[in-house]
Amino acid sequence: MGSGTMLVMNEKTCVVDVVRNIMHFFQHESCGFCTPCRRGTRVLYETLCRIAQGEGRESDLPKMIDLAQTMSATANCALAMSPIFFIRTTIERLKDEYLPTLSRRNAL
Ligand code: SF4
Image (cartoon, rainbow, N blue to C red; front, side):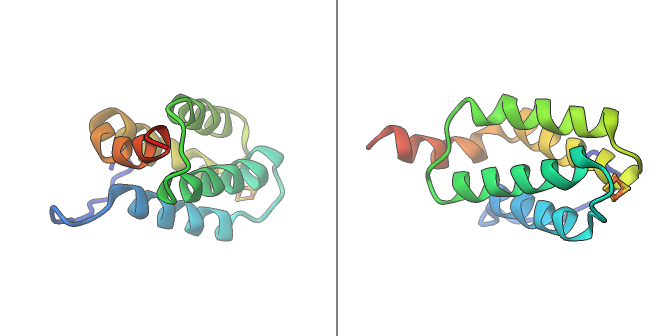
């Protein structure tokens, strides 16, 4: 996943759900000291929830990368530097996993 973490998944695993659960972990573990981490982990988690519910937009993907990069560059510790690896890796290498949830909205 780009962070020294190896996840074993099969073809039935929803990558969006996996990343959403990881962001829930980061949001929960954020101590709240730094605004980029406190707000950024929440926004990333909420965006992934919306995407998982079929309410995503194509523009969400580059926005999540930009936000995670900003968090990584401005927050105080390694916790906020980790989301970028999961976000960027899955969007750049597994973008097809995101597209069905985005296209559900576009089909309406
Ligand atoms: S980056 Fe570290 S210090 Fe800052 S809010 Fe997140 S967990 Fe706390």
